[in-house]
Length: 189
Image 1: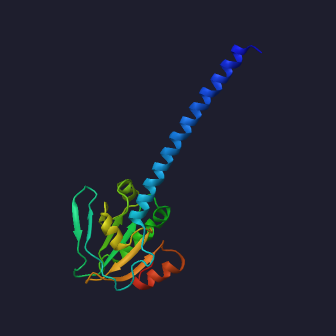
Image 2: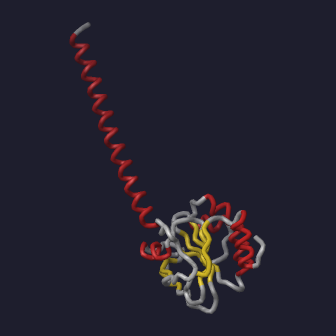
Image 3: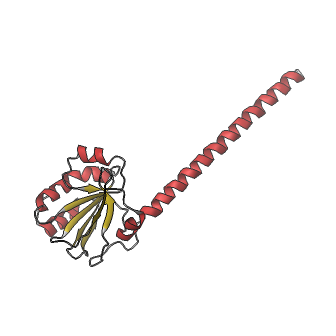
């Protein structure tokens, strides 16, 4: 074999190997960055191991309307409030949309129903495709997410006129949870 051809083949292999190493380092760096961002999001929305319990006092809810206006919901009002927490990318929230709609229609005169989306992106489309009729807020500050121990979706809270948790359910309204919620509110879902 010609030494020149051999040298050329070795150089080509090394160049190709260098390219592969550089590409591998770049991909690993990008993956590490994405994992860091995911971890930061999980820390922000990680629910407390204990969750909210009956009787817990909740602070006023600071968030934004879908058009970006800042709002503060103080639950000290004339009626207890149902707070429905969801995420537009949550598959259970999508499957559950008709049930929360039925609950809102069934209890709307007795309990104001408010929605809280954990992600702004995709929320308008989610609301339009599921015909949500109650007010929905998003862009919740990190300290509010932590105070409410938000993370699991769908999640339903009933908050008293004094701002205390009366009931808290995590999950879609199916099976025994559906029966529990129907019994609590006296509605059929």
